[in-house]
Each structure stands twice: as structure tokens, then as C-alpha cells.
Length: 198
Image 1 (cartoon, rainbow, N blue to C red):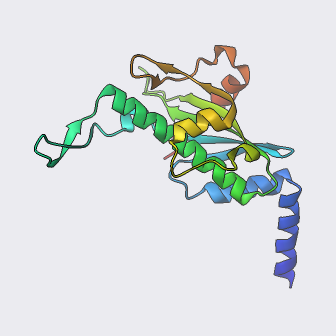
Image 2 (cartoon, rainbow, N blue to C red; image 1 turned 180 degrees about the horizontal axis):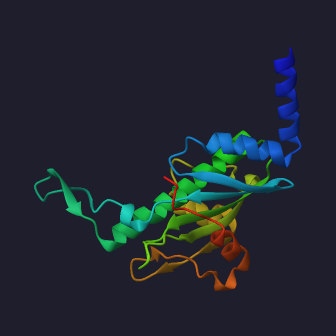
């Protein structure tokens, strides 16, 4: 009976978007994710989340293909293919995190996401966080999305708001955002320590 009362209290707190309860539920839900994610804050019916995504160097250097004779083989990935794969990976991890947040906290109406990756070590061995994507997703805009038929980057482009993403070169590869004009993101990134995260 006491356990049921505790569960009822948690459910009631979730329904009211109680910040402490929402943060705790999201922290627990994100623990086993392939991409590390952490809730940052809860403001009314909106949660802010940071997700650690892989760098482009983590993409495979070879991709499945077929020989002229029709036999399966591995072919060196082009810059275009690597860039496309990386964009899909970043967008995919972002969307999985957003969907999980909405599933775990039914009263949330929007999730603000910042997707970061580790930089290469500088001359002093320092690793910093770089923002590859920042966006807000409203629950209502995800209704009706054809998840199985649509690429992750297309969903991000069409179903989010306040999208900040930067692509460069002929391959349109993801490039870290210039935070000199994004003071809030800049302050957030300066507070993130990725050196001990797996």
C-alpha cells in the first residue's frame, strides 16, 4: 500500500512537471543509452538535455558495396558518404533522446537539445566540447512523423524549431557551431567536462 502511494506521488509530480522528479526520471532513463545524455534543467513543460554524439572520425572508413560481378565487398567511404552517415548518426541520437524524454515524462511539451562531441586534443592534451546541433522539439510536431520511412536528419530539419546546425565543404559535413554569437550555448559548453566521460 505504501509503495503504491509512493508511485502515485511520483506520477502526480510527473504530471505537474515537478523539476526534481522530472530530472530524476530522465537521469535514470538515460543511464543505459548508447549515446550519453543528461538532463540539464526543467522549466515549466520544457526540459533541456545534453547528448554526447560521436565525432565524424568515429564513422566507418569502409562501407558495404558490391563488385561489378555482384559480389559483396567493402568499399572505401567517400567524404560525402562519411558526412551523410555522421549527420544521420548525430540526428538519430538526438531524436532517440527526445523520444525517450517524451515517453518517460508525459506532461513535457517540448525538449531543448544540445548535441555535443569531443574535440581532438589540443597541443596541451585538452579535450573540449563542441556543439554540432542545437534545437527544440515540440511534442505536437512529432505526431504523425513517419519514423520508419524518413531519415533522421530530415526529421530534425522539418520537425524542430530554433535549429542551429552548420555544414561546410562540398560534402556538407557537420561543423562545430561558432559560439561567439551564442552566449547561452557558450556558457553551457564552458561548464561541460568530457574528459572523464565514456
